[in-house]
Length: 115
Image 1 (cartoon, rainbow, N blue to C red):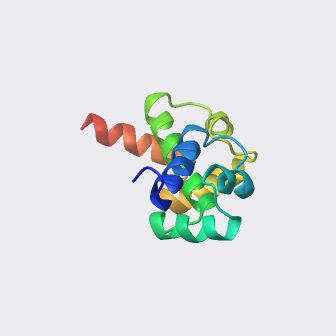
Image 2 (tube, rainbow, N blue to C red):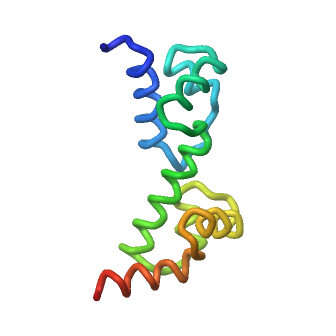
């Protein structure tokens, strides 16, 4: 249904996926989904099982991992390119999600894709 809550949340999800490196404001996403902020958060969590900020973080880190495989190099630059302001925060969150810091994970990914 074009006007269902799910389609409204879908618009917000699409926006986050297209603008993952930008500052995310709950008020803007709720407005995009034509909901109050509290209603938006409740429905977003029901659809994605995470908050909008957690979802954005996951997208950022997945994009960083793709970039690390495609163009290994400056880890801090990759972190900045996906929206992180701090290389240490990027490395910490990347390690938490993927089990290894970006530099080491990059080497592991490239070696395992060669084999």
